[in-house]
Length: 141
Length: 141
Length: 79
Length: 79
Image: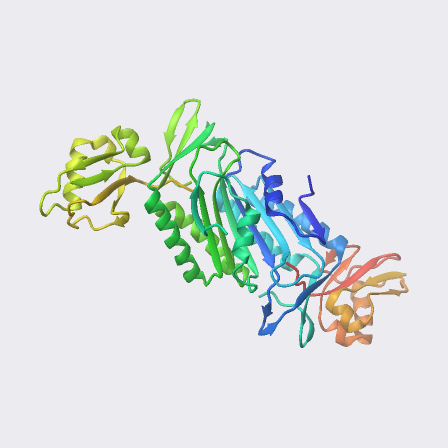
């Protein structure tokens, strides 16, 4: 089974990730997921591609810590975080978050917390390639 | 492509549902999903199976209206709702909710709202089969 | 006739999934409810919602017409 | 030597991904930051976070030791 926290070039399968998440317990009643995708339009400009840069070793250890923090904070049964690092075009997946808990409130709360925290804790940067030139993003809309 | 709102016996694929959800727009930046599963334990008792009864025609029209309400309320690009009606054992999927929006906050808010509303608006009833006998559920933990 | 449907926990208490009640001129949803609740108090103590022709109805003073499909339902527990 | 790393938007403004700075006895993270910021003000105006050996450090008074890996980073924008 793939690691619960990964940085990878390839796309991920939600079905595979959910299957892995559920494997830990038959007591899981709610699974919340979030997928972040590349958009064809951002801040008024057409975006043709998005590329990334990351401080890989720190990003992976922060993501692992973030998963453990979420499991503890929300009493999750399990959680998974996958971030792609490659050049993506509109519609492609960038990040996957999943939280599994006995009840839905904890799963939904934890999923939102993880994606919010990931954006402020994990050293990854996004560059939008547009017809007018490239631009690194530094805000969190 | 399968309908965005369905009541069915068979399991669903998250990958297929997400692909269908994304098909409507390249402007979708965030997708939030919720999956409800059967648990092996509920209110202190071991649960061997869960079965359902539904007022099928009303359930489907309420689910369709719920999807439209969510799209309007949260300015979603698209949303999907699938509920299974069959006998499931622990670990099996029961319900799937997905919300796709330009940004993550709307997707996450709408996903939570849809599962909360589904539980109070859609005429479906759950019966837990336990070693001590069967019991219809009427609360929303 | 009015076709009355039941589901899930209500069926279990009633022992039937549906019944037909003659439609009397001017009969309201409240009348029908009270008539059935008097015969089946154990089942009707868990009835929380009514629907007429597949639409949830909160105002029980609506008049029923011949051929209506009426449903008395317990609190939902799907999802 | 101290190995200094840069990423993404900071690399773009600096034109380099890393540099080596001699480690002076008692040099703090603040000293190193200020030294580089004086040379590369345009790049350092977007620096928000520092890490030492892969751990984010908020207290810039920490002393650096020979062989440390220091990173000056812009606001993150992943996810």
